[in-house]
Length: 302
Image: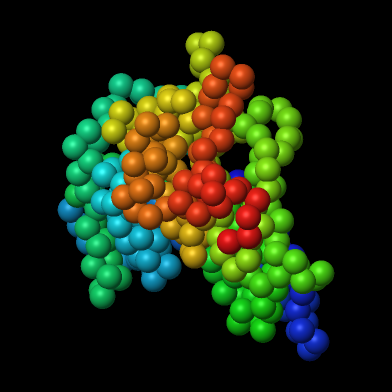
């Protein structure tokens, strides 16, 4: 997935650390093998290569992620859409890093390009598009890592991949996990505030790390599916809290695409807890929504 995973655990006696580490690595490898766009023989890329309109067998985990992604696509009115791989590659954010034909139109009608048969574990493309799960697969992998912890009897843990994480129980000192909310500043690591997290997931999407300079413009790796091009709005980063990291991950992407005006409305319509950081004359401003609203405070335990 082009990044690293990490895990902190306070296991009960009798849990073998090596076995736990192997299980965590296997969970990440499963997602990478099935859903990577960097591996030409991944299950996702084989679906992308299948003829349009033909049913193609897919494994259970990939089917579940595609179904969850389709659900968020519908709820977000297309702000989250998995059919963006061609645009991702064209703007230089794909495996090769090279740019391509950027004249491809987006999906302004937010029409589904995928049909799933969950019972038969198969899928088919409804148009000549390619799917990219970069905005949801890491969250799913984090959920699998959390399940590994619980399967090994570990109640107190923190697992993460890039900007996605899930906390179980408490730290070793009995306090909630303290998660730093990073300032949207390129080439620096600064903290805006912190979130005290107990039994929940967080996912952050931003435009200040994974970006590239094209013709004098810094372009975000997040693709607006309606336009088929990098997102350009006043949002610098979005953090979403949810019970499952897979949904937090997808919604963080959707809100980044929605922008500073529509994101609060999407949060209200879908009962989301989110922190929006927007550009301002002084640099940036922070807005908490749902459980992160000013009355709750960003640093409150949730």
